[in-house]
Length: 122
Image 1 (spheres, rainbow, N blue to C red):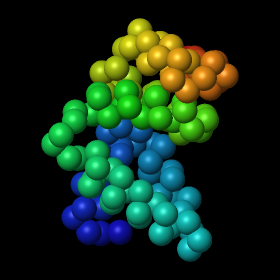
Image 2 (image 1 turned 90 degrees about the vertical axis):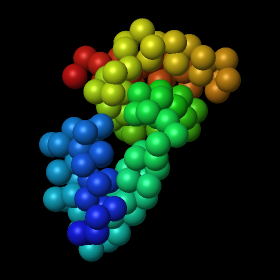
Image 3 (image 1 turned 180 degrees about the vertical axis):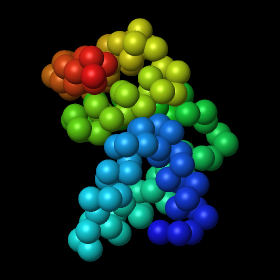
Image 4 (image 1 turned 60 degrees about the vertical axis):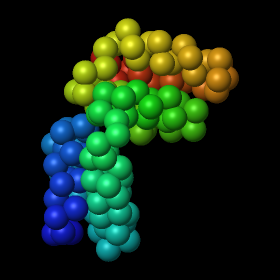
């Protein structure tokens, strides 16, 4: 967990999801799920999120749409909060979710709106 890639990913993950949440996730990791924390932090948060091709705002917008499509409310809640940190506005989140209604289905979008509303209220 001390590689340069892990540390860069950890910094990005903290910036997007919030230091308290990320540090608690790492602290709560045990022998069973620690390898997953390491994988996600290094590959997702460093090797993908830190690539130069897209800015963080765009990546957040994509994640909102994809997590809505996949019906992953826990992750969607985290990424809505992260999207706000990355400069995505409440109006943009609404537009993303309206678009998911067309391409992912109304039930997915309704759940996405519900989850996003809860996250925005926190």
